[in-house]
Image 1: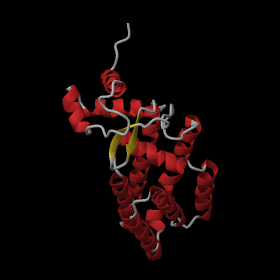
Image 2 (image 1 turned 90 degrees about the vertical axis):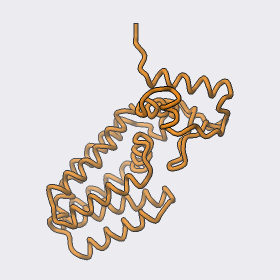
Image 3 (image 1 turned 180 degrees about the vertical axis):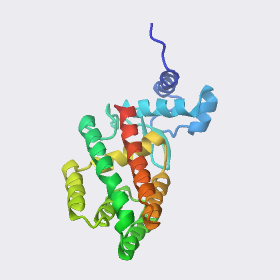
Image 4 (image 1 turned 60 degrees about the vertical axis):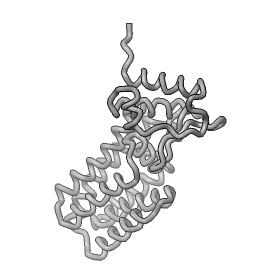
Length: 225
């Protein structure tokens, strides 16, 4: 007999509340903290339950705005737009290999002008709220680091990786944000930490911080798939 996990039981309870109309379509669900108190479980169980419900199309997440019961017609039986988890996982693995060393070399070789470009992109990411523009700035940040290695092959390789996967960067951003229940500010902190290591000329620190940043995205995908 299979023993059901806590998050599965919580997901069932939330689903029942949705189906019987306690939380009708469009309703904003209570916060993770309040749900954890209501169901007498840990916040991690609530997060996993909400992830399962999103995968089932019963709820949707507005980053920074909360979790809402899906309206009729919004239901989707798959996680956000990811159609080939295996390929996306391989893509993230290659990015980790390439960009970890890219950050290391950038810390050793970056110029003052390149630091200024990176800082300007970070400032844009802090001000911006539109997710499409944020995705573009995110991509530009990583490409600037590759260019700062002074090795054109690395920059070309990363450009080709991004081009070959189309919207994969957008999807890895969305999955990371949803899986971690984090807002864009959390990603912002990670990008700034990478920049600070590069600015300080800390090659090992830059590589380690970049690797940790990309490993989180891969870990989120494993939890989904």
